Image (cartoon, rainbow, N blue to C red; front, side):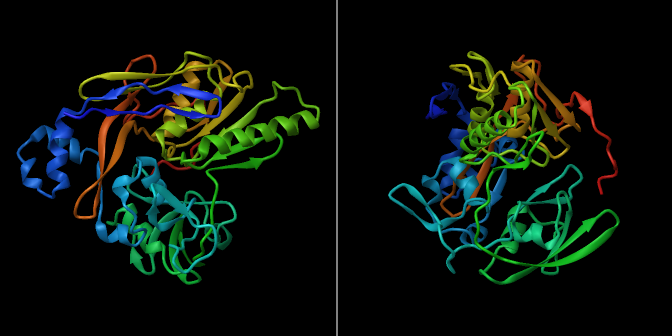
Length: 384
């Protein structure tokens, strides 16, 4: 059996000890048959079947062809996840092991409207436009409900299908119908090729840093924004202990290592960033040195759409720090860890391989979420 190792990661001088080993005997035994397209080889195993269907997703070859013809099998999981988003757009090929970014407008690029979509606990598809995007400029707000794309209902379609429907040729329009409160509106939005950050400053004094999701470059962008806050506070005569805000509302997760690296900026040396449990073992991931920004207090804003790696970020800081508090709503409750596997058919299987745990080993936040220190007023409880 091959063991899958989680590689060490670092950002400049910040390091986390990723030394755990994933021992997935059942999954590893199933994958060769999956790669060859023979589902019958694993069909009789109830255990493997339950692993495959438990929050796992299949990206069809048809949908992937509309995004890239890259050799997905050579990409890391985070590279593939980034390929499916619109923050960093990539060329349609993989050259010498390096994923090529699109740096200029091109008719070859998959044009979009600068909007993430995600599913809430009620099955609604929610919209999260980026600042300065065509979606935001057209009047779509977070967390509007997506009703239809070009007249085709959103209900019953996967997020991957909807994302492929929204993308299209550059300088063409896509009709997006959204529901807000008790009314629906139709927006005709121009597609464009643009890049949107994972992290942005959305408030000056007190400073607010919005982390939209954890992508390949989130930790670097976060550190950059914190340094700007330090400079602004100092220039205006504010003391170092003046609080700032990190806004994780609508952050549905993303790259686990980037979330861990981001959390390490604030944690003392030897702090547990997260513990990871799979069917055979539990691994613990700790910081190797103290984070540069550990002494500065801040408040994390969260809501019912904060999930996965974003919840891990909250849990790590709430456990390891005394000067961090949270405000908002109970988070979504997703602690499952997933990896991407390329199948010979051209499809990609996003497979659940484990579950994150609380740092004190008291269980997981899967399905329950993480409560805030201070609860904000909820406008609605009916899922609309």
